[in-house]
Each structure stands twice: as structure tokens, then as C-alpha cells.
Length: 172
Image (cartoon, rainbow, N blue to C red; front, top):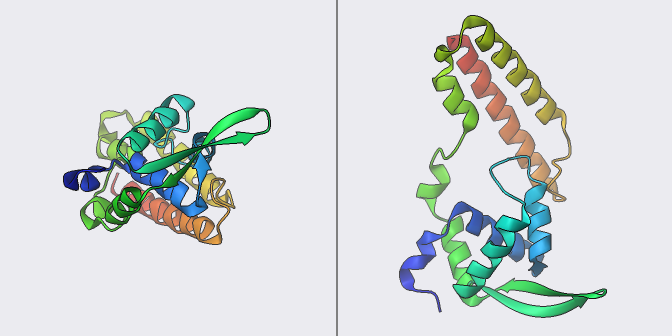
């Protein structure tokens, strides 16, 4: 059983993994790995070295219920959310403080310290970022999401990110 205090202690990766499993109803660690690997963000690690231990931790904490299934010639473990996992996921999804936290944004951080580059380096960086953001916006549909909402949400966030970048570029 999960202790009362551990509900709010889900990391972002744990919350995302529980969300992926919940959305599908049940999923193997490999399936979770593939969803994370399809994310446009490098923040999410879809590596087996990250996902398999994560799924074991969530199981040990009582948030996932494992069941052995056969897929072809191989045995696999399929995970579903336990009742504690459902409660933890709902708490994580509705945690406003974590939701509005600026989190890790490598672009925002670099823009804060761009003055440490010489003018040529700065201009090259700005030009390449502008091009990459345009390419990311054009990459439709969002590779990790079969859901129309995922695709639309991705486009909205990319547009907002590009607008923020363009505003910051005016200040440089």
C-alpha cells in the first residue's frame, strides 16, 4: 500500500508513465518506452535503462499492478494502474503547483546567458533556433501522439514557444 505522503511525491516521469498506462488501460514497459521515445522532448528518456527500473519502482510502491502475459514467443509483463496508482495519478494531474512550475527549459536558460557568447556565436545560435522551431512546428502530426488532442496541443505549445523566442530575440 502507498503511504499518504507519497501521492504528492510522484516525479514528472512517474506521473507521465502512470498517465501512459492509464490512457491505454494496460501496457508493457516496452510500450511505455516506445511512447516516451516518440516524444519531441529530449527530457523524457525512452531508454530501456530508464523505463524498466521505473516500472519496477512503481510496482514496488503499489501504483502499478503487474500481470504476466505471453506475446508471441516471449513472456511479458503487462501493467495496469492499481487503486493507489489511480489516486496518485489523479493527485499528480491536479497538482497546480507542479503544473505551473516553469520546469526545465533549455532554450529559456540559454537565452538568459546568451550575452556570454560573442556576436557571431549569438547570431548563429538565434538563426539555428529559429529554423529548428519552424521545423518542429511543421512536423505534423506530433510523432508520439495518435490522439488529435495530442497533435493540436503540440502545435499550440510549439507556437507559444516560438512566440516567446521571437520576443526574447527582440531584446538581444
